Length: 249
Image 1 (cartoon, rainbow, N blue to C red):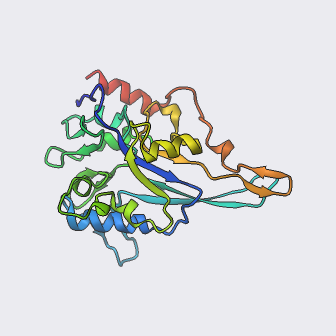
Image 2 (image 1 turned 180 degrees about the vertical axis):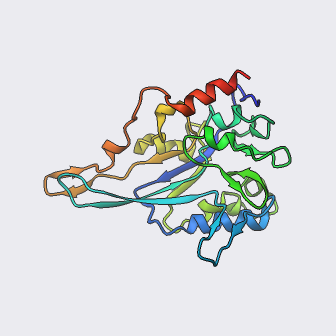
């Protein structure tokens, strides 16, 4: 099993603004393109032009229609990728040590040469952020474009994750969330940035900025507020059990 570092020098991650995301999927396409063409093994597709296409994506956008009681319906676009959790269960359950969290920047990565494709990390991740590449037989996930952000051969404005660089609405932000004076930390403080599913106890680095209240006939209504509340006080269920059990092995 892989041990998590007691602390990391930095906590690089994303801040995603649900108020400005328009669901265009530019981040999905740029992520697929950059990782397929530049990092590690390509992200494969199976029968892409057939009747039942499937493929490996490290970033996806889900769209939900929210209907409050006293306001018009609102469409919310919800991008999701690896959240590079501080207490990442995908790391601690890995039987070969292929999954690990870097001490220098907090990024969670997979050493593909050590991965056996067992899928335990995918079972342990409460966010569904890992995918098995069927062609390669290994688990893959968002790397925060580690091959871009440290690449001194790129112009400085390009040393950021591909999804952030591409977003036309400016809904994605990248930086060090351990630095209270960084732009991303200030955004979180000013807009009330939230963890995804905090009851899981994973302490995700990535944060979400909730949609701003919309005008309605009876004043302003925050349509997502009821849905963003924790659903449990502590981790529970099968995934919590298997994570604790495998940590003891």
